[in-house]
Image (tube, rainbow, N blue to C red; front, side):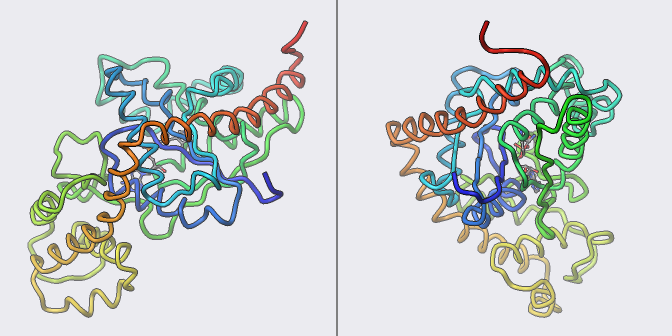
Length: 333
Ligand code: TYM
């Protein structure tokens, strides 16, 4: 590791990562990878707050590692690892549980949303999820966390927990701060532009998967919900559907939003939908090609996961040793 500051972020493993994940997270990760010591984790322990099929989970973890590399993360330069391979995450999560109030966890929007959607599985892990996320971040002396807007509340809680620990004991944890993109922090559902695009949405037309094929992407964009006007204008409050399409076109092509509005002045929504679809298809093509090539190479992926584990664990172990000492525990007799 150099004396650059550390950047950490994570993604839950799913075979269905979306362009929301890409625009809000991966895109920034790739752009920032030369600037910081970067650590990226496939956070599989977070995924088991919902029941997972074991074989499917195993495969989703490999899919996610392969996708991160396909999106442009350099495995030699960054630490890319699978969360469950580094036990220290669970140890620190427990310690942080003891620094977190029930009221704080009950207030989390994500907890409320997920509990409302899964009434028969409101488990303790779902409630304590932000403590594990705080452990992920604090184990690595993280300064920056690039995430989409939906993670802001968890990062704020992480800072509160770190502050409390540092006050109750001594200054052990670095205070991290989020990096949230100005455009792309919240890509909306194609079927309900008032809701976030999410891979767990039951309506598959609502999201574009990073691995969706050309026809499917075109079909999903053509079905995108817009409004009853005929006016291509960026106005998130009054025209959320059209604004979401303009935003995606802007992010995929780097064309300024005003230029897109000018280019499409007087044209129909169908033309915008088609152009946006084409730009996303073009963006995803090289990622998909690289993904398929990497995903087949099991030896390569295993090597990345093992190397990532060793590098991550060396840092995490050092932090846990310091935390233990600070609170009066010891790893030896
Ligand atoms: P997850 O797996 O839901 O999402 C991964 C990243 O993608 C971003 N994202 C979006 N950005 C823009 N528009 C969208 N529609 C959209 N959907 C998802 C998320 O904001 C996130 O940055 N709890 C985290 C994972 C996590 C983590 C961490 C992140 C665990 N430990 C430590 C940072 C640091 C989550 O469930 O992300």
